[in-house]
Length: 293
Ligand code: RIB
Image 1 (tube, helix red, strand yellow):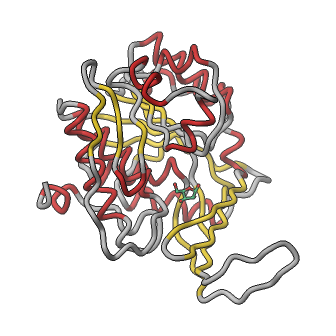
Image 2 (cartoon, helix red, strand yellow):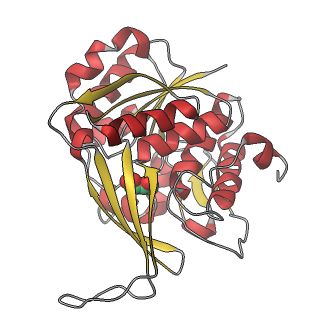
């Protein structure tokens, strides 16, 4: 089985479903409040597990009941948490999410996720060197992300960098990653005022821009390719759709599929994920995805 390490956030999602979003100074009455397990790193780790990979998480939670709960959830899904720390005097990460018409707005409070340092990565160098792929997002400190990319480059470990939520990073790091998967908004932040087609041509088979319900686009060295998403009529909650896409994209690549096939796999899995509430509950198993291919 291929080994994948996810170096990223582990959080609790506090979700309010509402029919309207309040303006400044206004109060509106929501319909429902729920909590779910979340954090982009944890979501992607679970997507990778459901896709059939052997998954190792490197991250941090608070040394409290919530922190233990977050780790327990990951372990229950089969994620190895040997590289996850319980940090004293820090809260676990949380995300505060409003859902309106199936779509979300998110405020994150990083908490322990903000304490994943370069020295934590160094501590686990030997284990990380055993990985077939390392997966990163933007919910941990940027200096740590940059150190991981350098480490992967030096040790020739393929790395997928999902630059979400949007942040800037020097171009030299973009050059070193194998796969870069922003959505359109994250693309604009990464490549300010640059033309999409030009950037796709600059990074063939590497830059994959996800387009929400329109699918995803990349350049295969000869043509610009849009891999359309399936039409989903019963969208319940889009939270975690991108995480599911990334997990299943990696599954395709690890199986030796082409970028196009892997994007298709990611699209199908993400289409299933948005038909359930919460970032993780709807992430499909590989059997479910396979049945739709
Ligand atoms: O990608 C979705 C995730 O982003 C949520 O689970 C939430 O934790 C936010 O960080």
